[in-house]
Image (tube, rainbow, N blue to C red; front, side):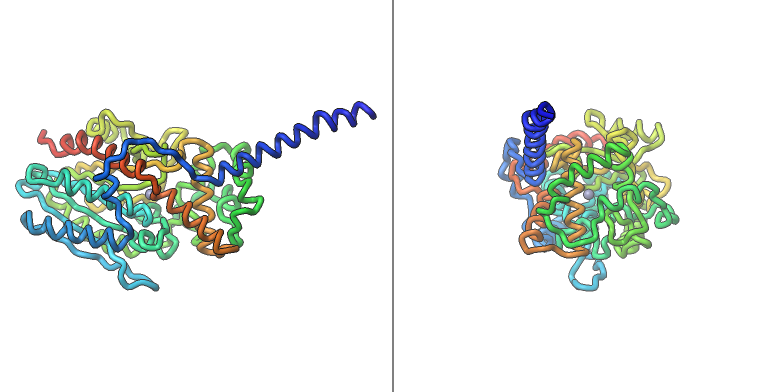
Length: 416
Ligand SMILES: [Zn+2]
């Protein structure tokens, strides 16, 4: 009996205290988003970032007007996105046709995931100011799509007013909305809590333990695929792809067909943030046939492409670049998603942190917050996930974009 008491007192109890302390330590670290970026800052690059959706749109319109004055047959116009609450939400389109032969078309799209439009705009402005010139336009047209999900950009959501993820809603086949995501029910309870958000609740503080326990049972690739692929059954859940096309799809479809018609070769670069190693530019695309893959690898040679078929990655349904391709059938098509990493989602902790922030934001939107403080914390974290405040991060994003564009754009526009 005495030995047992001793064991309890000197072994089990201290061990428990250490475990609890470690868990608390991790939980505090888990709740914090403090990155000390030390990428070199270029003032001009950091200055590209807009203050708001409206500011970005004003600047985009001013740049479009300049292009209209400088080149032949430039068209620029807003497309009004219908809304229950806001009569001034637009996708802004600017099309600069090839000034000589119409051989190649470059499409640069931003804000499919609303709040990611801050960075998307900065990259679009950087492209216009540094690459769009007479030489570039000789045989290449450029189509700029600004804020494909203006509601999400303006109100800092990733999804549309209908809680729809546009990058799961863009149809390239008719049966998209009947897609059955078998794995979603496995993760449903974990990723869609149904009550007011209380950031300090034990459940949230120890979210990572709950999640790791699920991972232990089902493996991370299975869960990631289930959660991220897109789902068409739970309108209040995350990664909801809708039950029909969002209005944007109907607005863009005829424009995409008409503009791409004269061109042979079409590339879309769709701009996103939030996935991958912090500060790094990532390229990814859904799996492709071998010959298509080789074609992409030639253009992007020297850069790593995530093909969506490795263990570390996932495939999605209803994504925007495939929809764009479907509007231009029979063309030589190069779809690519550019993601700028923010929270190190390539690590297990980083990916759990990212999804936890998404969960809380969605939960708060549907079920409210326990306090103003909770609301402010979740909204600030959410913005940080898609639009980091760090000047160093912002500047480095543009620097890497330059490295990519310098190499890839000439290869794309080159005559063969
Ligand atoms: Zn995105």
